[in-house]
Image (tube, rainbow, N blue to C red; front, side, top):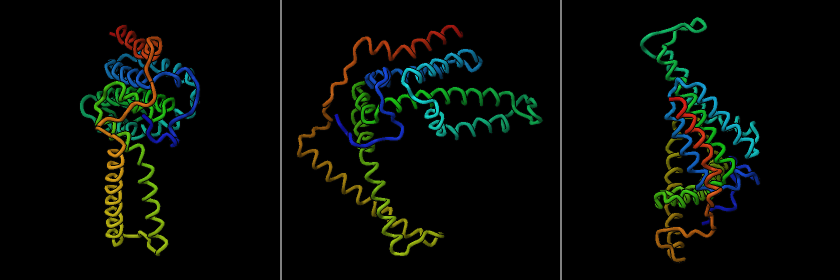
Amino acid sequence: MRVGAGHRHDLYLPGDSPVHRLPPQCKLLAVFAFAVVVVATPRERFWAFAVYAVLLGGVVVAARVPFGHVLRRMVIELPFVLFAFLIPVIGMGERTTVLGVSLSVQGLWAAWNILVKATLGVIASILLAATTEPRVILAGAQRLRLPSLLVQIAMFMLRYMDVIVGEMRRMRVARESRGFEARNFRQIPVIARSAGALFIRSYERGERVHLAMLSRGYSGRMPMIQDISASVGQWGAALALPVVALAVLGLSW
C-alpha cells in the first residue's frame, strides 16, 4: 500500500537506526502497550515513572533522534500542562501552601498524575512519528487488522490534507488579489462562501477519486503492495519496551 509516498512530514526524521528498521505494526503495538502500562501505574510510584523515562531515553539514543527534536515537538503537550497547573488552584479538600500559594493536596496529586503520564505518552508518540513515516504507520495499522474503513479514512485524509490546504491558500490569494481584507465581522459572509466553495470542491474531488479507484478495481480494501511482515526477533525487540515497563509496574505493586 502506497499513499502519498512523495510527501515529507515534519515529524518524521529519515534514518537507518534499529528503531527505524522495525516494522510499523511492531512499533504501534509497542507504543500502545507502553501507554497502557504507564496509565496503569499508581501515581505514587515516582521511581517507576523515572524508570519509564530512562527507558524512553534509551529508545531516543537507539533511534538516533536528537533530544532537541523531541523537546520541540513536546509543545503539543502545552494544553495538558496548563490544565495540570490549574487543578491544584481550583481543587477542593485539604490544602497546603507552596511558595505562598494555597493549593489543594488532591489537586497536586491529580496534576502530577496527568502531567507525568501525558508527558511519557507524548514522548513515546513523538518517537513513533520520528522513526516511521505516516503512510507506513497506516500500513502497520492495516497489518494489525484495525478496522479497514477507519484506516482508509485516515489514509486519504493524510494524502489529501496538503491538497486541501493548498486549495485554501489559492482561494485566499485570489481574495486578497481582489482587495479583500478580513478586518471585522462584516467579512464573515465572504469567508463563509469561501468555506462552502471549498467543501463543494473537496466533495467533487472525492467523487472523482472514488470513480477512479473503482475503474482500477477497488473493491473496498486497499491492496498491500509492500511486504512489512515482522520476524520473531523484530517483535521481541519492539516489545522489549512495554515488557520491561510491565515488569517495573509489577515491582511497584
